[in-house]
Amino acid sequence: MSMKLILLGAPGAGKGTQAAILSEKFSIPAISTGAILRTAIREQTEVGRVAQEYMKDGKLVPDEVVIDIILARLQEADCENGFILDGVPRTTVQALALEAAGIKIDKVLSIEIEDEEIIARMSGRRVCEECASTYHVVSKKPSIDGKCDRCGARLVLRDDDKAETVRNRLQIYYKQTAPLKEFYSERGVLVTIENQPDIPSTTVKMMEALHGE
Ligand code: AMP
Image (cartoon, rainbow, N blue to C red; front, side, top):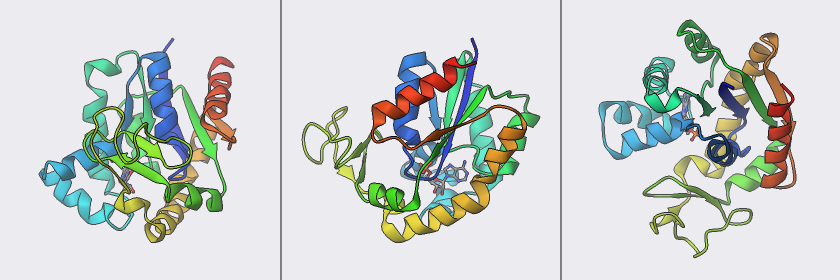
């Protein structure tokens, strides 16, 4: 069975966490353009220099940049049996570019969650400086405070998870990304997942949606 999935949802909805879980379950890669862009910034590549200017304010990186990145990534051999896209597409232009490249998405899982819940959650989010693993001070604590379970490096609050940037990112989400729900609904592949009290129950809902094919 082919498994070409997109996770939609506001920033902080838990896309990254669920993408990692589904990636393990189905042995397909979870692909985050945010993670790829943060690596480019760390490595000070040309793309990184451009992306940083937008990301520091919580703005979307221009479509051309993101489209190049994602189309190149989807050519890699590990995507042969499918993939989970986390944080891409974020605009209709990006979604159309995937279609134009002949990439047919099987399911789009949209995590629905209230703004207040998101703002509360985001302030507790931590990310590993080295390997980009994600944690949360309440719901996904590392074994040792402030240290990554995977590689032992320091955990930090991402600049774009700070409260004022979060508000900005939410506005951008509603304006530019939320219309993708209708886009994929028209294509018959959208499933909405209501916010659940914890990470495992969200995974259960997603698995039900995927098996209901
Ligand atoms: P994320 O890790 O998915 O929350 O992404 C962090 C930031 O990277 C976003 O706020 C955007 O500035 C940028 N970014 C990531 N993915 C995309 C995308 N598909 N389109 C435009 N900008 C993106």
